[in-house]
Image 1 (cartoon, one colour):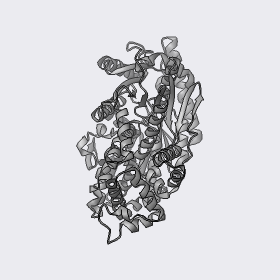
Image 2: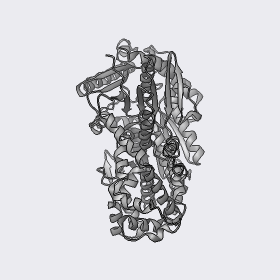
Image 3: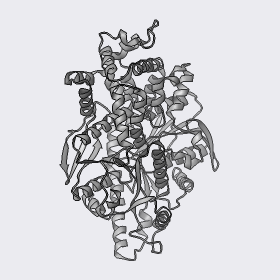
Image 4: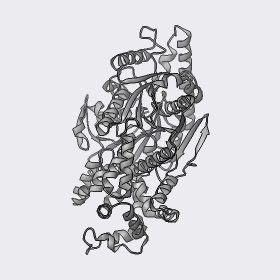
Length: 338
Length: 270
């Protein structure tokens, strides 16, 4: 079955199952078919660079890469770069200068999941790609990614309007005096407590950060409309990846359950690192080996059986003997054309 | 035997067997009469169903799943000296949205709570089943990032205290679990380097799910298995100073049996 390309293709699953490798193979396959493809990885492990010959200094920039006869764009997600792009698009230098925002968008500041939504939005607005392929972070962090839009939504919730009104006031009071204006509303009371346990300097930076982020609210809110597109079969393919090695049925089900609003008919289970044929053809030379063979075969067959019961579309990818990641991809690409 | 650390942080690429290893190590410590507790962080955001926040005996080991909501409330209560104000703050949509928007903040609350508990009972040893690689760094960075953000005040003093514990090689130790595959190994080394760049924290790499205790290179094996064994033999030979323990692939089926299988190979991690 050849799976038609969609504007957004999302790879998700638990860690270590070969998600990045499969997403990359899909991207290269589509590019080799003449499509204009962008591959984005928000997996902080950044294994993609090993696979495509990207370097650390390329992080955050869209790079054109070549693999055999395919040319495609690749982007290693970086919060700092996304914030910079947002700042540029919003003409808001303050966005990249506030010290709190700066600290939180450091490589391990924890903002990758939410900002990656914005990044995909920015890239899709360029209108130059037929397909944007997303390699999401593993397991529960993938759920963070999915809930990114609702988090953004809550952040700009109506109940914040008073603080935003307050800090975006044209006649905004000078730094360090903001706190004196703190009076009655719930938010103000909260700030008062915050003042008790932190310093005035922090509070001013904090209020400033909130104001700056609020000014860029539109960019954040666009992340929401993007998420709606992920729910439409016409616009997206979902690939849930798991591997024989791990056989984490429970975790795959957990993801399926949490993503049920998104998993429309166009979702596929990819079962990676299948070894059954090779194992079955092997004649073990002693009892330990025989036991290993039987256990491994049993595990693989059971897993394949349960997955085919749970998912309508299951695709099988072989375990590849070669340790070189590039060789891996060349082999996997062939499977997209079956 | 060395004196154990107070906090062991098990991490590594997803799917390397962190949970099994962390639980087996807790079991090992308990078998040596230490008051070891297997520790996890229940949820990544407020408003999601949490946990009991109590140490419980499960499958023969002490386990604690920290609850974000309860931990945060407890912390604020202590800082502001009022349960009422803490419960009010926890209810404000502003605070909730803020915590959920900044994942690093969760880790600060969780780590703070764990270290606080460890301080109250000096016999406690926590074995933390921590998030996969990149997120482990987010967790470790949370203390210094928020220290930087707050700059002064009570919370700042707390982050400083947490940082000094985490950076004390006698107090805390990171155990990175790696599989005997090229990608997993590379990522483990990258993680170790990143951690070492940031702090003097003690850090060990263990090789999990090793096939070489079962297979030798000369054995009659399918191509894929042979390639794996070949890579692993070479890795163990070249990195014998870096690999702190080689943990054999277990042929048991149940999680408990697998853990019992591993106990013997974990003693070097203390």
